[in-house]
Length: 157
Image (tube, rainbow, N blue to C red):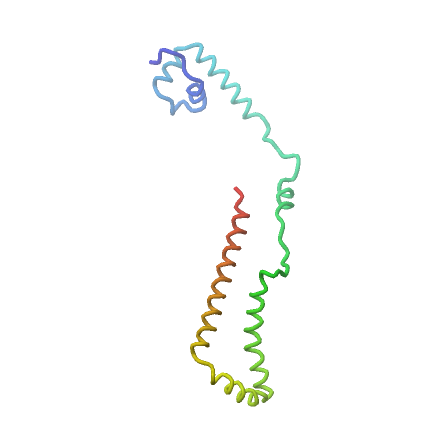
């Protein structure tokens, strides 16, 4: 048995959920008139709170949130210029020879291209390929960092 009065948290627990209270708290509540009076006050308070109408916003919350969520229009920037150049180069490397092949001009250029490239060492070709791959890797890393920054901007909680 508890000799002193119960704490407010014990009394509130008794009012809200008697089943989870310790036996000492229940025994004290049955014997102490002062703690029983506090329990009755809490019962009235809790019943009054339950009867209150649920709060309602006086504005449209979804509309207010949607105003703040803006979609960024896609616009051309110098940061995306290398990507556009790579795309254009690949399309040109595929499109121009196919056009020339269809128009039979390829035979004229084929002899000159073979003559020009025959003097290039394989080391130079590998250096060009490695340089292009390094450039491509850095572009991918930059794109991933930009993606992470945008995700961090969305995670505002």
